Image (tube, rainbow, N blue to C red; front, side, top):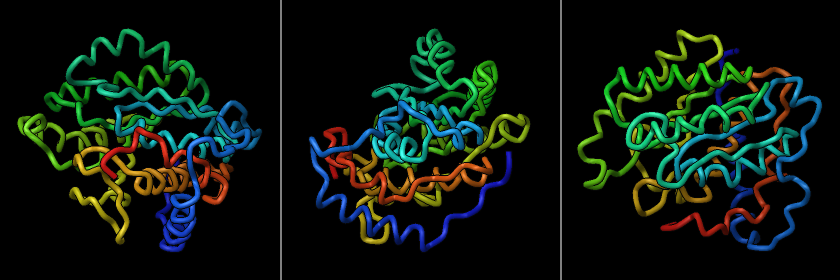
Length: 259
């Protein structure tokens, strides 16, 4: 895989303009066309981007809403394997997930597995490393690359208070795993979320009032950022313009709360 290029201010500004229109105009029942992720273009398949499977917790579930449209509009088959209240590969109840995970990841055969590191990735650095290495191995069994994406910073409540140091280690551990595995890449999403939790960016609400989840604008920005990252990693992949997926009704999903 190749080193990514950086996102331009012009791209961010264009997305903001499009999404502001989508936020006003999109709604339940709006025609989303035939872009459900069930078809793929020859270019996306040849580039190695399709299928693209997203794995993670309820934060990732919010990101999946625009990402499914963005990926499908770009000609790749999208698989949503996010889980509310779980989705983690290390930490509480992770072993239960591992019982089914190899079968679920097989849907990404020949493509890409994107793991949004979760706020449940608790454990020692060694436990985290073992889980990420194991995930890379399972992805490789399906001839799929693994992209480990840093978790958005959170505004922790008592539930997370005892695990902040563990969560802070996840990005460094994931980067170490990626450096040792040709089929794995670590993506630092701080370009989207910032280094510390902030509910607003450039005057737009990116994060839920609960301090954990994303709002439509943040999820859309993440989707656009990830498409740009894929361009740098997979030559030949051509992402769709934001106009093709931002105004598709997903922003009114009830999953977005506290926005």
